[in-house]
Image (cartoon, rainbow, N blue to C red; front, side):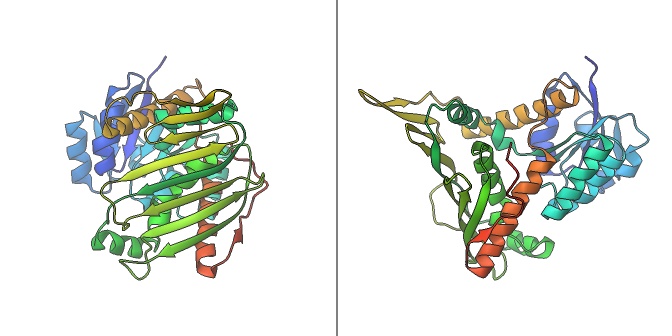
Length: 340
């Protein structure tokens, strides 16, 4: 099968440390160009990774023979760059978030449909082996009806400079930066139902306008409930990314992966040995994600983590901010959509 001619847009840390090393290893990818508004950086990265072209803008990419783009630029530039890539007719992968608001994301989703462009949003946690296993257990009904989940992502303090930068860019903190991942994970696992309402509390321990702790509840239409927590300032000895789901017949846990099921003879525990370190698991998830995008372009698999899903996730995030501001439970708009 013909290689996918691809350009990478945004030559920052995640591009250099994750995306480019993976893309170089994929036999189905031909890296054609690096695009960054800092041309010196684009040229240096192109030379380092043996990529033929370096350019400053998406407009300059139009003269090159590419079919797809991988957008790794700063968050505030995603919507503008993705829009330009869609207009050029290129299948597009963009690191999360797709846009800063649900309205912007909805416009991009509609534009991609009109242009016949495949648009995938980076949610690499979906490709973690433990998440894949958990999802399979849920969908095969091996836990019974899952009615409760608790998930979180807790990281060390990000520093005053990081919070100040977020305040200037979009005024949102840990709920937007980490909470979006947890919301996507929960909705991905609870894909057979819809979100009815949410409630949230935000805490501003290190900056007056950028939250560093978020605690929230998601109420689903079938009566299921999920709670989530994200933080940059809870005092902990290490990072923690986890998701625990509870069904009528059993429970499943990540990280590490474990399944506990009720049997007539008692409780059974399945705990496969963990393969490699957390860093290796992180890299494997990214590799599986980018392989999926390329296979989707080639028509081998349907694209997952779509723009339409990104719209719904952003609506939940926006409702959580509204709930925290109003200190009350908030109905989520568009709750007639089933998450798939």
